[in-house]
Image 1 (spheres, rainbow, N blue to C red):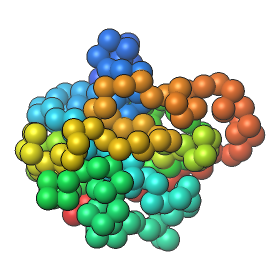
Image 2: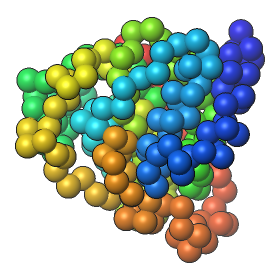
Image 3: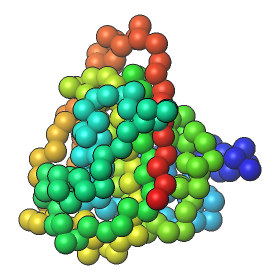
Image 4: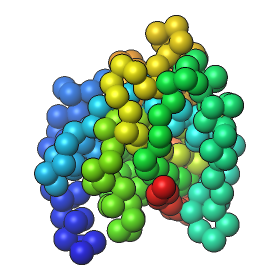
Length: 222
């Protein structure tokens, strides 16, 4: 079952990679959403609305791990308390707490080496059948993705949050725009982000070339 579903993941990747610069900004979180939606539509599921408020909260979700890659996945996996969405994540983003909507799925991955969105999606986030179930769920209507290094370098985190909210009424920014959330990138912001956080820059990767790869991912379902 999982092997068959994985075929739907691999097929659209080359097409998305070839057209990324046309369809999205120079932002790895936007690219991650593009890959995700391409795989959903290839699997006959609807494309999801990219909600920047939800994406900003995904970045705050990453920051809650404080750079601790080992807390992602495995027997000692940790996750932020649900109360943090209203108490911490939303205020930090400038998202109205009254506009928070149910989180219908979460995908989170972390490793010591930066990779591009298509690789992060297929090699880090899509690791098991539970991840596939979350990806193709019919309960989602919106998505938000975030990518961030730690202090401008490794480890690197990728996070995708799904919601069943309605466009223009869920995860709404209080002043129309997000509060400053750097370092890190989040989708739907219509900006270029990679240069701002040292992602995709060769010089930032050299210090980690000798680090053995740590790839851990964990998919959360509700």
